[in-house]
Amino acid sequence: MYKLNSDTNELIEFDKTTFKENNLLERNHIEEWIRKNPEVLGEELLIIGHEYDKFDTNDRLDLLALDKEGKLVIIELKRDKSGSNVDFQSLKYCSYCSQLTPQDILELFTEYLKTQKDNSDPQDVITDFLELSQGNEDSINEILNNSQRFIIVGKEIDRRILSVCAWLHENGIEAKCLTIKPFMNESKEIYIDFDQIIPPYKIGDYYIQKKESKSNRKAIFQPEYIVDYFEKIVEIVKDKTTLKINYSPRKAYCNIRTGGKISYTLRYFKRDKSFSIHALVKDTKLKEKLSDFNIKYAEELSKVMDYKVEYQEEGARNPNWSYLRVIVETNKDKKLSERSEEMAELFIRFCEFVNNKWK
Image (cartoon, rainbow, N blue to C red; front, side, top):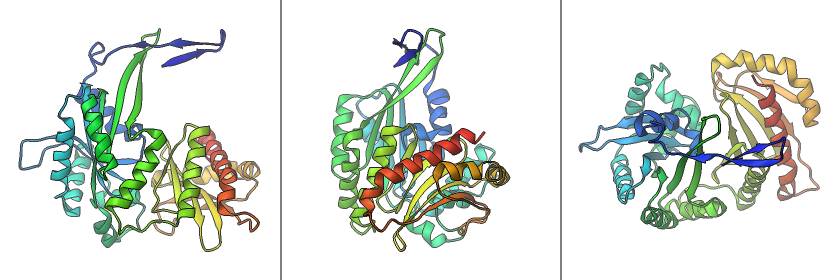
């Protein structure tokens, strides 16, 4: 890891250090960092359990989460070397968790929220995270825990573990491995670097598609031209920005989440072939802030986007949600694939403007 010295136009390398040297512990520190900010693992996750040990055995898993597809995600952490059996341990936890019903998940999430002194309704939180309609219990029962996967995080991951996880992923079992390494600058400040090893970023999309086609043949996916379009959007956004963008082939939209309790979505409407770019807040405490933001910056943002900005106080799916939206009309002279660059640029422009002004 390097820091740019702009005065001399050279890179200054940070010193490598260890968690042990800095008294940073697995449970008290690394686990807490990820519990509070699961996006550092490179995707949107909802933590629903911490130090979960309610199995019939004496086993305890580090963190339990949901991903945007409703799958249970087992997160196993190792401060130093991963050892040679963490893959079996993770698979064991996946098998245990496969028996959890949607009601079991709601109950364990309820307990987790209590430990965090969070009075939120667990079903509402999960519904919002999965972007389902409020009060639709059938949808929750259908999507929740439809599959299981695991993520291994460690300073060093044994090559035998990487080999097993690569094979598992290639054969339809989602396994993800990331390294976490500490660095120290000249001021003795510690920086933490996460690096995804399995699946490799460059072929990660291939692995994911292969997994879904093998193990979930009944799943409904978007037409290939829409999937290709959004995968190109994701590629452009990742190439040009540090924004954390996510996409699932089931959807006709992609999302960007930030740490400011505001998310962004680029959606494609197949019926009229138009696009929507919007900022969304789900916290009722932020509705007034978004309304004030609209009053103050809507005109400026409209000029930046070259499209009119609209404010929607209540969402159709959830009245507690509020939106700031831009509708981009169809261009009949262009195919969808030909608008990837244009829409990616508009999406980036919208997100960066709101991010910079949102304080």
